Length: 178
Image 1: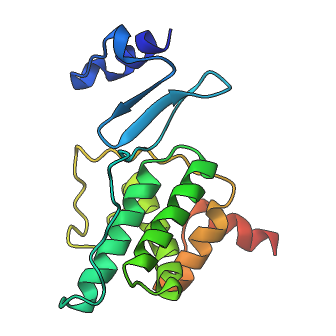
Image 2: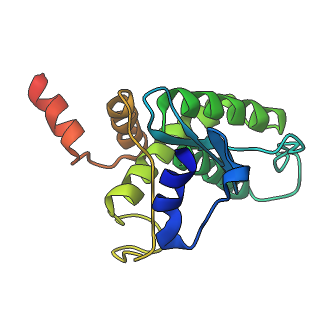
């Protein structure tokens, strides 16, 4: 039964769900946790129906770095809240549309996306080579992104955009194939 498996997985974190709350999916904070066709637990971003999805308008009086940070952090959120490629792609497209509606340039958003994926992979692998916490590993950081078939293309593009060398297994394999 889904609720039993979910409770078993969440027990160490002090989270317990009642049988009455759950069918084959449950909304918890900003996640929808559900059982897929293969009887595996999956998750995706959850937004309440009343969420207007309005982001800081680029016409407001803020430094440009603030607008970029809003887009980047929301992309990280979308990436971390999806366990499947198809829901990630759909949620990222919706986010992009929402940010464009708030005045963001689609071109700039498309530049930021691969950088967000690279950052999420660094978080997942424990590589803290960038950002304010260089070299420090936060013990309670949990990053649950599952990677999918397009990840190698995004990683390579992200490393090209950021100017970082690519030392991951994916890039090494790609270099050996050429």
